[in-house]
Length: 392
Image (cartoon, rainbow, N blue to C red; front, side, top):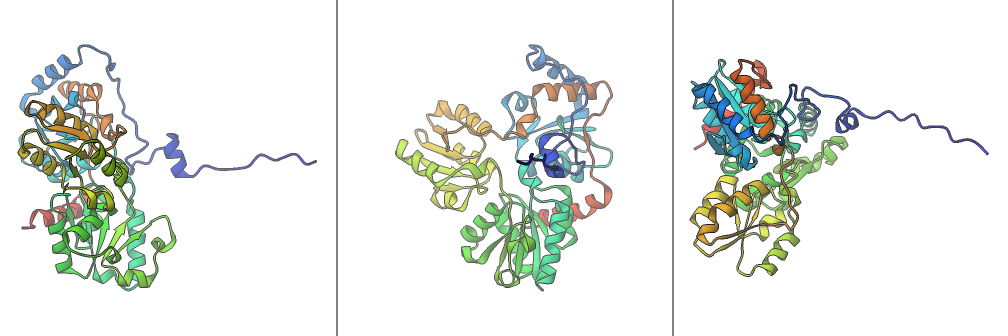
């Protein structure tokens, strides 16, 4: 009988990242937040945040994404989606510090659009975005090589969702493409097809597919999915030549959880309910919904909704809960589309202790967790963003 020998298995770099044992400075995962944070149970946190913000005065401008916790939103000078907040930051040239209560790619965009004398701070560097992490610069460069070998690269215009890293935005700018938001994805795709015959849509396959099929009238057969973890993206040259939309295999971990069963279940439980979902949801969910739109669209739709109406919302829970509380007095019933609670876990890393720590540090003259995009990346990323801003 032989004795089993121990396996000599070496964890991959990705496995080490997920285990928290290594760090990749280009990634939105595996980073640390230096400094001593106040305890989450500190009863003086709210007053400390107020005092630090008051001490800073006009030197600081605090941005709060819709998906943030209420305790953080309470200190935001402006709330909005990622693009609105980046534009708001750019519109405040007198603010020395921009404290971005969102995730990493949002703070990068703010740094790109603000002046060199302004400093963008992210209260917790580990507040990343799983979708943005699904497309690295190396993977996208390899994809472009695959498109080149298939003889289609010259026909392809990249369109990258705002929910992407600065590196991906820069790639888009270098190759003549544009950025889009969930609000203007249709116009961005229309523009792209005026420039070329095909679109490489990064990194959210669902927004790309839903916009192409629902808004531009394409068929599902016009779309293929490029999987960066398979040779040649898992596609043949013929499939790439036939496709109009080359969708990156990425998705939002929050919106991707909603299912057709979720829609059917809520209709059975709440007769007469209006189902309103974000376009990052799967195609079958969007097809079964009554209304589809961006975060800003969802808010405006509920503002305009008649009293007594019933709504099931397919987006992040912090926002849904905030809207339910806001419109309860108007007898609008607003529920989360799925039965299971789902926060954006990385967005929720920005909590009151991190915000207090960042504000107090700035008030003491110490800049912490500054987000800086290198000049070359900034140049090409800004080209792509400016193309979006120029869209009619």
